[in-house]
Image (cartoon, rainbow, N blue to C red; front, side, top):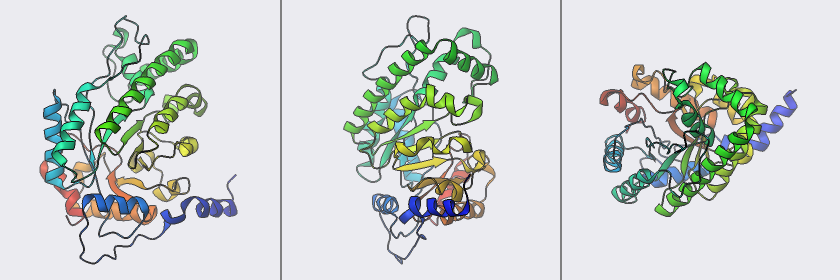
Length: 343
């Protein structure tokens, strides 16, 4: 049980500089995107917090994807360009979803997208890729089987699909691990390529840190070792984000040895205050803005949300939603976020 003395000890040991009160003491000095991000990562004084937000474009070509990302960055002046990956992981050619071979490049179009964005930014701001954790890639391939036609296609996949995945993990562990190994090796190959291109890291989305996907023991047995390898491969990047797409309290400490430069989770869907999460992680925290009802938020509401998050996170903070904002958000709705930061 966590008593008061233990709680205070954890706060003191884990937080350090991260819990220092943020200061915006640079007067009227305006930082560049890169300077602002670097100073936030170190917990230094800022003119304002760096911020990022994003949504899916789902365009058919790398050129169109890149153009949309660059236009979004230039319009809303984001400090970090988070590049969505809406290209599909290749399916098995055998008819059995789990019969996968490691791929040298599972997302060639995404690599091209990153190159175009790199050249278009010309050093204006850092950019990061988006990577699904191996579990989510396996879930997408599993759900594409004919017997699940008509089942929900969303990120949760529906209770029937999730139960079927859990049953498969237990009844056919060998094929589960074979598939996860192939996906992980393919992802590691992709990571090497995005680093060569010059990305500052990747947002790696871990979907199954919640009971609906299995117990904590299930996560440790069937997913965690593969997630850890992904983060180990990104350890030398400065802006990799551990994105906990689903998060419940029993899973919080599963990721402390992943050592991600930045951690992000949804305050809205998890119900876990940033002050509580900060007890466990000293890294910069990205989040605080409601991504679910984003379209309904006023500029003042967004400002209030990021300020409250910053007060709880401390100096190491990046203003952001808990995940992507709705794809149908209008330009007026999108413009409220930068206005909430006086941009």
